[in-house]
Length: 93
Figure 1: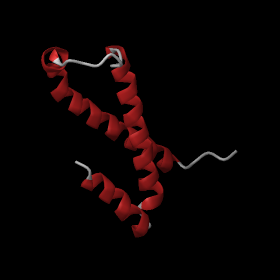
Figure 2: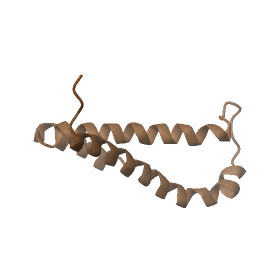
Figure 3: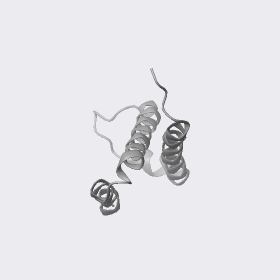
């Protein structure tokens, strides 16, 4: 079994770290409002427990990192792949 080149591994780690940092920065702005605004909301009975949010968000940001790695690794050389991929991120608010 052949190992991937070191640059590919570094790209993979950078893509995941960048996405995790984006999630961390976002949490700095939302964490202060959890005990006030979020706690005051009337939630439905099927609302998940508070402990589940951290692992779910972490998993989502890891998956976004993997997706960005795939686009970075394979799609940046092909404008027909990269442009639509990045346009989707740009168009979503």
